[in-house]
Amino acid sequence: METTTATAGGVMFALFGGALLLWCAAEARVRHRIRRRGLPAVATVVAESDVHGALDSAPLLSFVTRPVSGARIGGVPGVEAGELVLTRPRGHTPLRRPAHLVPGGSVRIAYDPSRPGRAVLAAEEAGPRALVADLLWTALGLGCLAAGAVLLLAAA
Image (cartoon, rainbow, N blue to C red):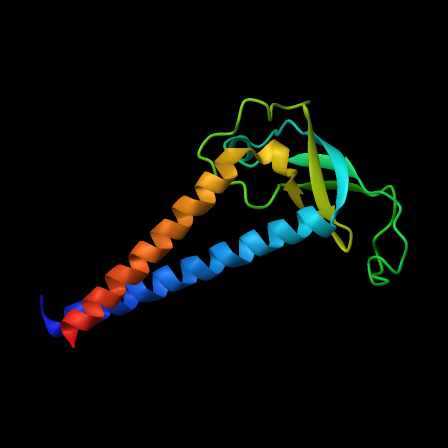
């Protein structure tokens, strides 16, 4: 392999792997924070009329926000109790939608009271597949980062 090709490939692999690792860490942190500090709720899986939306593995969820004191959410305006929210849960990456997330079904979630559209499935609803998916994305990022480092070292 030529030096310029190895360098360009190494840089691309390293950038992709690094960006993927940063994304994985940020998503895991957001989900963990919302599950620990967010408000629990029960959401209903909504049937989607959009053909492309129905193919998404993350279901469209509908839930109503609860009353929260202003001190808890930092006095953020625009967040009212009883607001109907439609959102997709964060960090839901399986290729197929699990069987228990059928339209009309109820699932437990946690949501950020300052941004109700930011919701995650409760840990018991996400199941062990969420951990496996996180590990696979992390392994892909580490592999790309390692491949980039090897190519850059070979080019040097």
